[in-house]
Image 1 (spheres, rainbow, N blue to C red):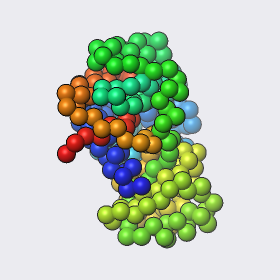
Image 2: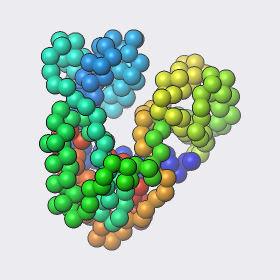
Image 3: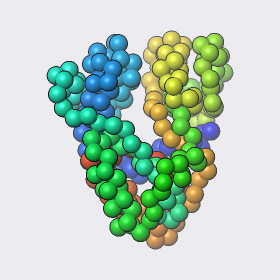
Length: 240
């Protein structure tokens, strides 16, 4: 299970390095969450978690406040989540999470990147079944026993829990994100989550090597340049 966290860290490092629009990304997510569930973080748990993540990623307060004000004003775009999938460079599997106000435009942009990189965009379900959709929490700790006991008492359906190198990783179903976070926070009010997100974790790794590594980096760079792209998930691993 520690491997899943390591893969996720590698994935974030590969994709976030090219993400020059992180403020815009968070601004859009916060706007969508606030518009859907209200702009009060104390009443909108999804929004509260998102703001916590944004602050941890050093998103300025004015970016957050602007997104909340826009959602409260009742004007603005109507974004919908979309998940695109396909086979990336070197044969790895790729999922691309987007927020879009024009699905046809976004799909055209995504397909264009696949075409330019000479890889294939897939149909719905062609790749996603090889990923586990999970709420993921990572925090410092020497043993998972106390956390597991607390989660069981809170009736959380724990998919997996592991302790490796002083970090505890907890995986639960996405719909139990807030129940999980609440239980862990009550266990330790000072808990500092290294990761707290709903993500897609690959069920198996795929080694990308040789010339395909450079093409993979070009592929993810091009995707990250698209305004609608929020997250890139993949099962690629790379030789050290």
